[in-house]
Image 1 (cartoon, rainbow, N blue to C red):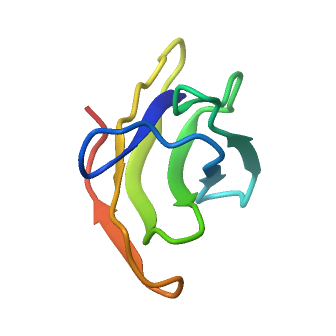
Image 2 (tube, rainbow, N blue to C red):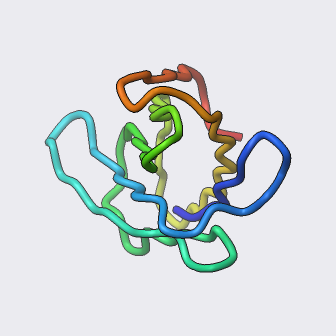
Length: 96
């Protein structure tokens, strides 16, 4: 699983904490975006996942409905909005 994290204007966001949690088992793996806003979570077990994306000064984004299958390399774009530290946006749906 990989992707790019940007703000609402399309600017890349380095230093974002990205955590994938397998919803059936609770297994977690985390990464931090690089200077180009890219994150990679390699070799995840198959199954359903929730992706939590956090950065100070931005609303937390939680995306559910992500299902990782064998030999799949999901690319998930994330757009973060400026907001209060305690705000959370939850997106429910299938990953493209």
